[in-house]
Image (cartoon, rainbow, N blue to C red; front, side, top):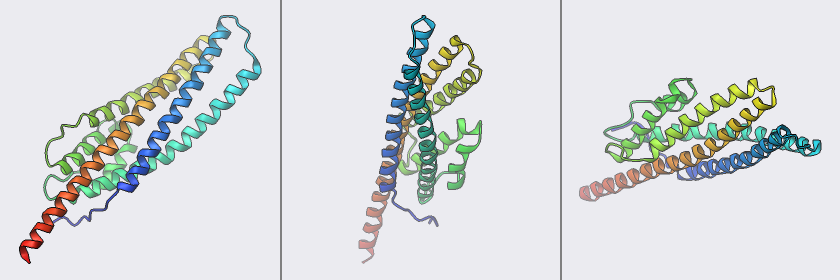
Amino acid sequence: MSNSIYKKSTGFTDVLISLILLSAILDGVAVVKNYQQYELLMSAKNGVDVKMDEAGSLLVHLFLINVTQLGFNIVLGILFLMWVYRMCRNAHCVEAGKPTASPVWAAGVYLIPVLNMWKPYLIMKEIYEAFRQRPSDSKVLPFWWSAWVLSNVVGCFTSHYMSRAETLDELLVASRWGIALDASLIILNIAAALMVYVVNEASVEWHEVTQYKDLGVYWELV
């Protein structure tokens, strides 16, 4: 018997999914504002007079959106790691096929550069398979991890071009990459919400089946 105690996380999962989808909406707003900035830059390149009030207002909006995204993503990241910890801990309640990673390692590996590009996917796959008691046939997990890798790659290019943008043409390139980054984050958030839902459902179903089995054994004994 496992020493781990299963704890239902449905309520916590529902909150997390709601916040992830809210983050996707925030990224959508950022796409719109970044595209407006791109249009202003294109207008300036084509010799069209750009109103300074309009440009200044847009810059303020972009700054506020970026600060909001940063703060929101920090909170969301902490909650997501808490959820990963809970799922891995619950998966250790499984009699056979439990994950090889500890709950602390399952959550902490996301914070380790390079390793976080592949190890968290393998751990989450183990967690899901532990609940399903069979090899994973889910297409959601690969979709989620592909979106994660894509957003990281796009983020690297965006940081590279934005840090070196000085001329108008370089600012246009950086602006395009900024739009691409926010678009990739929308995809990532949708994929993450699906993954959280699928893994939690597998956890709940496993627990319900286990409870029924335990109840059947109890009635046989009495």
